[in-house]
Length: 202
Image (tube, rainbow, N blue to C red; front, side, top):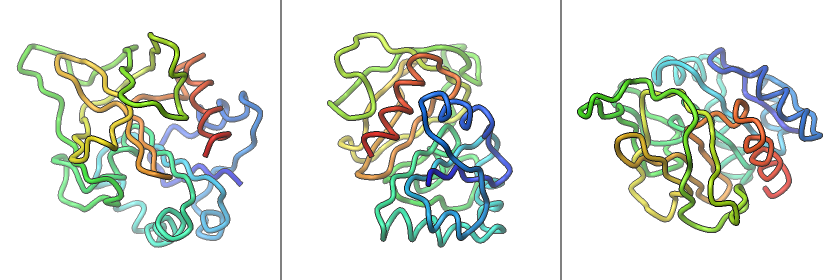
């Protein structure tokens, strides 16, 4: 059972539609039982880091997510803010993240006059062969809307980077833990391929 975690801070409708488009069914749920019975978890997110963690805490979802991801090795995909929640924390707030990834989120650098949030289509640069992207395609574009970016302490966790003034981590993977800064559910053809690879290869 594919579960899109509903904690009040994600664009879940677009994710559900994309999953259906690639031939799978999913449920949107904040139920502890559903999460504990999931074969895959998707953690979306739009908004602030601390509010997201507070919502997850108030719904008593932290422990069941940890049990699935850490003990049972269930694949989890964090999207946008959801990606950032998988790290240790963010300068946007004071609460601790899930800490699955040795990383931290910082605000995009505006020193070069770049607009924040970074919004629109951008290329990814694949850093290592993996099962999520079409490794033989040179130019793959995804849709971004974000003001913060993740810095990974362990370079081996970095799957792709993207340049917006400076290079930043646009996706990471550590075993069953995957995070993407872009929105695959809004990324048309490349998003379809991404979801298909996630659902079939993990």
